[in-house]
Image (cartoon, rainbow, N blue to C red):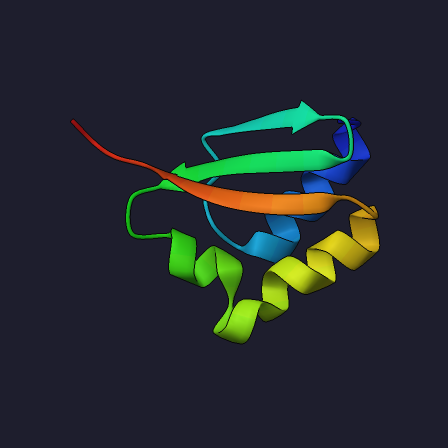
Length: 66
């Protein structure tokens, strides 16, 4: 993922991003525990808008603190 795309992702999700994994056209974003709902947005609105901007499928996963 290019630096510009990563910055867009950080700005649009408005949560701390622990790491990003890219597999072809699918991007998996790992966020801190309790932040997934904010990153997804109401009804998935944030995820859909990020997918449109980046033209990639987006998946949000929480990292559990152990």
